[in-house]
Length: 542
Image 1 (spheres, rainbow, N blue to C red):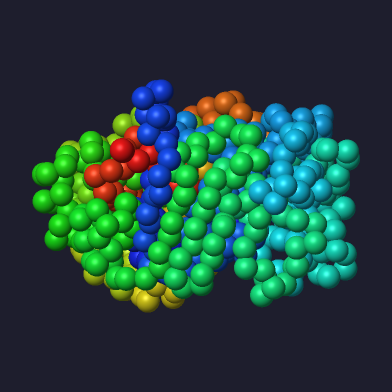
Image 2: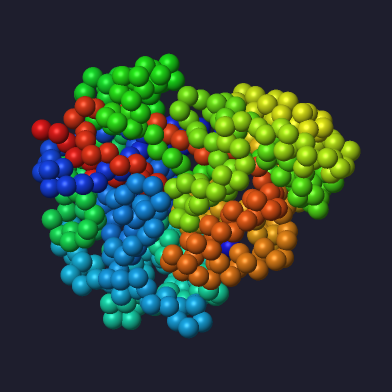
């Protein structure tokens, strides 16, 4: 089951702009908690969809996080700690059958929607089956393909998946094979609990009843959305503001100025590049009003292990990792827009280990030349990149870096969609490709497994664009994938370091970072690694 996608710069520029402002906030003490109440004012450029089963929009997901009590969710914490799911609608972590294929989630007693209607296991089952219905056109169906009977619903041969059962107040999900990342998937907004009679036709649905800390009280399309506290919520999620008021419209620079002057509190708009340096001087990054948010993503060079130059040549692949100037490559992303890396897992993913395998501050040309000596195989490489100015600039930097170790690089530039189609198609004649990998959820298998498991090469949506196919690593990835909890994180963390240290099928160079700016009355900032914009956890200074 392939669920993740290569992210193209052309397609994700707007996503980065929106996600970069997203922030999670938590209370650290009674003093902070006392700052609850008031109205948080948010400005969005466009009206988000509020039928969470049908949207991939980051602003919709942030509202879903505030208003949904999924079976599992993510804590109001920054860094890796915020990337580990814990029970929310479920009373505890699921019990798992001995064969690893059946997960039983016991739903907490006493749950209610804001309408006072009871919320039971049947409401979670209804969300899963609605997402599988092809009439709903839900992206969530892609995350359920390993559920027994999901294929029958997708074909229209059934209305409910055989692998989704309600037993009392427990939801039982049976998979076609063991896959502990299910606890990550059920935390996705697609699986927000729904009323049993909710139409499957998305055109008939405007919003969903609230089951989380907040609910949608007002929605005037293309004008405003108002969230209010859900008085029936009994979970651990933070809900400091009494109201969260979204207004729709404006333009990026205008919305930034409104935050600067205190007319709104936060916007889905990054500060303009021209203003960032001055803001950093005045407020100091991550101190009072200007903050960075690490994305769940890695920028990297794919080193095609199925083709001449890098085929059976880990020494040269390691040489490339020593030769590239990661700081120079990251600077092409823009001011404060990335940090250097040499691993597949980003620091905010569960299991990340800061091993410092390759130089982050500049190339080690002497080491690179020693590794390349005798392994150049003609010393010619074809580099594929996109027709975006920063991507072309990175290609020139890589060309210059690799020339120092005896590799002559030919650059080929493509439109974003053509580039993606080429690098994911087996047999395409490239040696190096510059791309960005975004995970849809923070399970470490969605980096290490997706990028380094050779069995994925033959999948319809191939993610292994290094065409790295080593059966011994495939077996270890499969073994790690069968584990759950901390053992899973440790196993993938070890694999990440070992693969990069010994085989080096990629040359990771940066983790994208977004920047957000808040009004002076917003306090208690924590940068969340996944939903990023934890509206309910903002506290407002009085």
